[in-house]
Image (cartoon, rainbow, N blue to C red; front, side, top):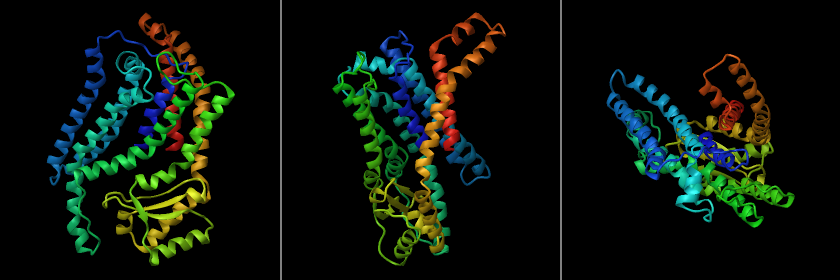
Length: 378
């Protein structure tokens, strides 16, 4: 889901680069509105029907098979929503919002309005999935009680959705929104705002340095905000906390605080945030502590400390950035080679005209970059 959110914002950045030229369909506003909103409503309606079909099969011999199908379709849903979002960008929905609906003067409002239907579709999919999640959790309560394991109340539908929004969307979307706001502020200050209200990355050395410094500052300080966004508190004192803090000293990995991550028992996970010890936090979820022994929790802690000690996050960013730059460089060449090969097969004239459009080349390069980025980060 994090990759999904990043892809949405990458689309916004690419849309406002000089090389991107959306194909502005001459559609009346009701038709454009139906295409923009209606397509996502249809997809969500189909997913809701699938969730109902799966729910009715739980507890029967076909329940496991239906769950497997639902999991596959849940992954496919995000791919379909990304495809519809790309269609929105290519068909000029954002330009239409800026010029005809909202206007170019309200910073970031047009981008957020464009993103809203996609995020609403995601939230609606969680709403539809919740009865299945609740049924599965309720089925484990008696077993947990029999084994003497902690039993927490099953989260409500709104607790489920809010937890997903915090962990799956907000921790990625909010820093990216902050960076977009900063870019628009800098663009306005240095006179780089385009006539249609789009973000134009400043080209002067001073403006470029200010943009980069602001984005880097937001990125580096974001872990401090994450501890509050994800609803955490310091891990209570006791033998476990003393052992985990002792491990950090033994391995010489510093951090600001060891946090208990409150998820209503719904997320079994741990994570480390921040590049530097003064703004680095280690988060361990309540469900992880409920489901693991002391030795297992210490093994998880060792894993998180290794991420910090080996600078894994930094090197993942370097590898991902290098993949994007390399694929952006080779993408046009690969596209022209493929086009040359296809044209020598004498395709229909309509195909030839399609291949010659710059928007198709841009879409191919973006797809190639996205695929390479996913491969590196996979």
